[in-house]
Amino acid sequence: MRPAVFQSTPPPRPSPVKLGVDQVRAWFGSHQVLHGIDMQIPEQSVTAIIGPSGCGKSTLIRSLNRMHELTEGARLEGRITLDGVDVYGKDVDPVLLRRRVGMVFQKPNPFPSMSIRDNVLAGLRLTRSLDRSRAAEITETALRGAALWDEVKDRLDTPGVSLSGGQQQRLCIARSLAVAPEVLLMDEPCSALDPVATSRIEDLIHTLKTTYTIVIVTHNMQQAARVSDYTAFLLTGELVEFSETNRLFTSPRDTRTEDYITGKFG
Amino acid sequence: MSGAQLSSPTTATTRRRGLYSERAFYALALLSIILPLAMLAIMLLGVLKNGGARLSWDFITSYPSRKADHAGILPGLVGSLYLMGLTALIALPLGVGAAIYLEEYGKQSRMSRLIEVNIANLAGVPSIVYGLLGLGLFVRILHFGRSLLAGASTLALLVLPMVVLVSREALRTVPRGLREAAFALGATQWQTIRQVVLPIAYPGILTGAILALSRAIGETAPLVVIGALTYITFVPDGVDAPFTALPIQIFNWVSRPQKAFIVDAAAGIVVLVLTMLILNGVAIYLRNRLQKRAS
Ligand SMILES: Nc1ncnc2c1ncn2[C@@H]1O[C@H](COP(=O)(O)OP(=O)(O)OP(=O)(O)O)[C@@H](O)[C@H]1O
Ligand SMILES: [Mg+2]
Image 1 (cartoon, chains in turn brown, red):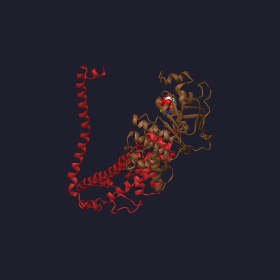
Image 2 (cartoon, rainbow over the protein chains, first blue to last red):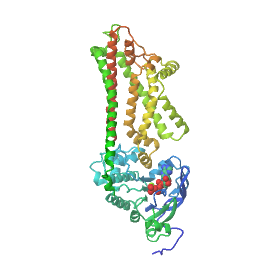
Image 3 (tube, rainbow over the protein chains, first blue to last red):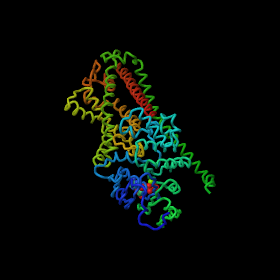
């Protein structure tokens, strides 16, 4: 085992970098929210972002798929790379980027005008036409992927909003999976769910990471410890610490991290 | 601590006072709905009493005549229906399109803020002014003549501001989270609007459109100005045909010296009100069906 020494950089990663965050600064109007974030997010792993409310977790995760810029007055500087390519580059279409980097939101948000099936296929239907057999296949794969298939397979044509909150959130995950992204961003996906639904989603994250690179924002430190391989601790827009989850929780390098995970503030 | 507060003695009088003001408000609200309904009922009863005798299938399917007891309302009814349809055809796409632009695309620009203020102002412009505009623009400059098309275009202008305003209101009720969900799936803005935003906003847009169009069906002044005929003995056979409309026909009868035509006017009013009710009913039915499909 590696001794818990103080290092200025995280230890070398076993897998290649999927998402690179390089000196990212973000603003809402004149209010700077992120102050130069640097992170290397490894492929096929789960990276958790923790930190007190308002520290910029959502802003950071939303800048990864260029959702940040959709807010009026929002601005960003620095570089974010996907497989080494700058996603803010001139010839990158944010629409195409978002098909490779999917997102699940805090509040389950299935499309109210669509059935379960149509919700799953929404991302594909929105963007191209689909033949029937292929659609059925994708629906099943995505719902199985989101561990929802057995619960809904007999009522695919009922409205998506008729499901329970936890099921709706898994439906939203299925909807993201259907477009076959490479990265899945999750912004507090369990905060509206009960413990049972939460643990189902955590199990799901475990399975999904064999295929996808996952970045998850969470308020719940136990959850970060349970599901993630790497953890980033954010405080007032600065990245205090980013390392392997085990290490961050057992021997944090920064006293502020220690204070936070031991519940001294936040 | 908080449990004790629930039954604290200080609240007894406050509660009673609260109850009185609650009742008073309820009574006031009830009165303010009963009063206009009563007036409407009185008016309708009066009209029915006066014109009920003339109301028959014959009245609806006959042409105007110099003899009061032979006169019918067919050209006016058909003209009004055509006008409504055409007005909706012109005003809805334009109005909804403008609302989509203002709400979804042009949000932050100065230009759109300017447009916004002006649309709100336009909604308050008297209808006769629209009539004059219609006369100048559609009848004269664009050479539509004194036709259905000119009438419908004028009415469309008249209801446009309201259609824009209510459509924007409806678009605004669509939660931001749903738009974001669509964007996050890699949808373009137009795909998001078409397939996520509009299906949810349709019922609201339709409700507003119904209200706007009901206003148009009763409008007389702008049609008089652009020169709808008051006495025609044929049904318009195209958008370029001359026309008359229910309110114009009614106005014409009322202004005749012979008493007998007043009865025709009363019957005409009943037809106008019924037409409006039926159109509204159909639209509300459509809206409810859309709404059911949307949720
Ligand atoms: N749309 C917005 N417009 C202006 N300021 C915003 C907007 N969204 C967030 N902010 C500000 O940016 C800062 C960071 O917000 P962000 O949502 O990223 O925090 P967070 O870490 O996700 O918080 P939480 O844990 O409560 O979700 C906050 O100070 C917030 O007030
Ligand atoms: Mg957040």
